[in-house]
Image (tube, rainbow, N blue to C red; front, top):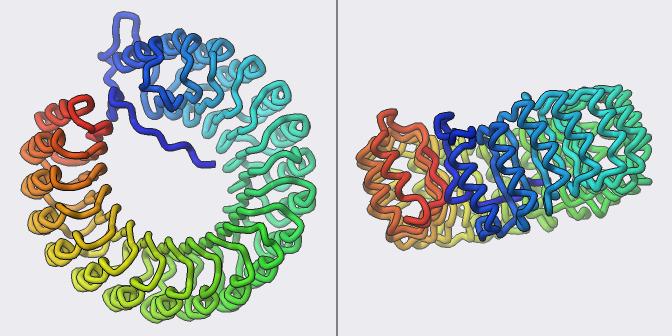
Length: 570
């Protein structure tokens, strides 16, 4: 389940808060600001989210927040992941929870200092809370805490529980399995715990029938554990299953293929599972009978030509819309076999990154693309080069593709010139060109065609864009539809930053990423001057000149309400 996206608050700093910025009672200045808004129930929390993710939060901070949350009528989601919660702060949080008015979602992941004692205290108060969503990922729980949690689960209102990477092993899984049947859980994440085959077998026996999302990635089970899970799948409502990064091999793949038609699965992820052609063929042949299946992830396995042929034959008869085949040792021959089955399918998203399909493979793919429904195609690190880029330009105008990923493909200036010339005739809105050896000549070519394209998102990180390249690009930015521009890890310097700053007020840009570009105070001040006259809401300028002291000060002064800028990464 994806974490909900939320705008950063105007009053939230994106840098760690110095310990000195605290009042006499130890409450940090930004928490004081939060508390003032919480007390008045102002519109800063109209979406119900209080996001402290990544901040350093003290016991005094937690107590201050707790004191106002009990009367606040808007906050339903509290995100305190990676906040370095110490034991006393954890205890203060636990004591506060039963008295909150509307809090239903709590994220406490990545707080290793939380300790077992803090976790135990939290577990004890859960039945007295209104929480339906709890994230404890990557905290130290262990088997004893897992058992304690299991004992109270049926007394809680929890439907979503994330225990990813919490050091639960077979005994903990066994304890949980005894209590799970009487819970209301629909989402359970146990990724990155050493459950082993015994743990999975016990879990399968106690799995609630109402669970729809089950994540068991990297739990150290093989075909034996997956066989036990598969045996109960038909009696359950599981629609989303992740068993990736487990060495289930062909045995596990064949078992899953056999039960697939009798399950409710719509999303199945079996990435990096040591599956080769035999298992891939079995899964491919079962897909037409699993008509609920819309997303399949097989990245990191060995598809081979035989697997590609079987998949090609089946795709037309499936309901699949998303297929991930990253790093499956494809090569051009396997790509040619797969491409034949792409036509006339329901696929809208295809991920073929890290396969080195080369020019022959890209030629086969481009031939098939006009007869597909694809709108998102990921081709990172496939060695397509200039020739492959040219092949794409001839077919892209006749496709439905709106998002194209071409990073790390050695396209160069020549390839980018051909590609950008075709842009106005395509439907592309998102284009990723990270690490493609694009320099000032490529930027000059792109600048000429950008204003006629439909692009809203352009990613040009880690190329060879220097001052001249940045100036050329800046000249082409006005009158484009771009809202997101990423130029991180280049060398545009102060002059390049000044050129982009001059163009900002004439653009639709809301997000600009200029990290690691050798920008100093001069460039930063130019950006600061331009921001109030622009539409920019997000600016990231991390990793530039270490002496960017004056620039940081003036940039901070542009934050809302002095402009529309609500996120500033320094």
